[in-house]
Image (cartoon, rainbow over all chains, first blue to last red; front, side, top):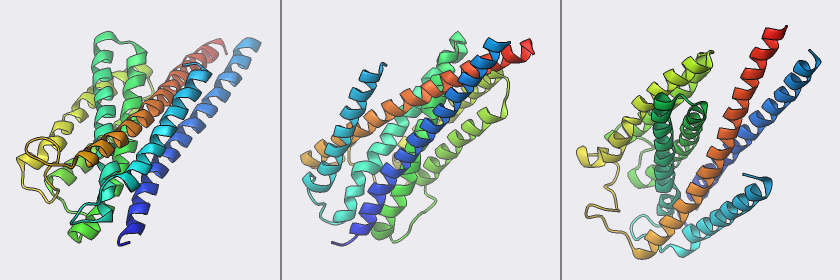
Length: 46
Length: 226
């Protein structure tokens, strides 16, 4: 099976890039949700 | 979208991804000259098409923002641009892996490859530009103008293989190209899967930008009160 490693590397990289990007959006979203919570507390307490 | 809708669409996209992977590896017929490595085609080409769609969404949203000045168009523009960059990263990574065994080189500065690389750099610059402008309205206007300018490279990338002699092969779809019917079917299943992924990513990225806007507004209010 010539070039099987290259083919697998290409497929894994495509899904890897998209998965890591999806994770990064999720992490940024979670951080902002924390910020919203903190700011709501601050504004509520003022 | 509610949480049940989110789950349903995520499951549908996951099923499409599974079908696309199976079809590309096992259902598509083997190509005679390149053999196994040609199967990169089923994700390389649809990644580029999906990236074009994402950049077009960003382009259309940028125009809508300049006309209407509603923040939601700016959120959509940045979502399309960032997701487009992710898909073009896939194109730029899978291209050389395919090129090495077929052309004997990883990369060459021909018109198609160079214009694709320039497109990726342009949209990366768009994202960097956004991070440099603090004022939300100025940031939205500046990036909308830059987003429209960046999109001008898309037709250049697409037509480069017709306009110039390139190392990159001529298209197999349209203008006299030929592709086996089963290869066509697999190609479109893979594209459908990537379009589904694009829709989910743009939806999440849009939500992120909407929340960032909310945080900015609340921070201004908190500063005003203190």
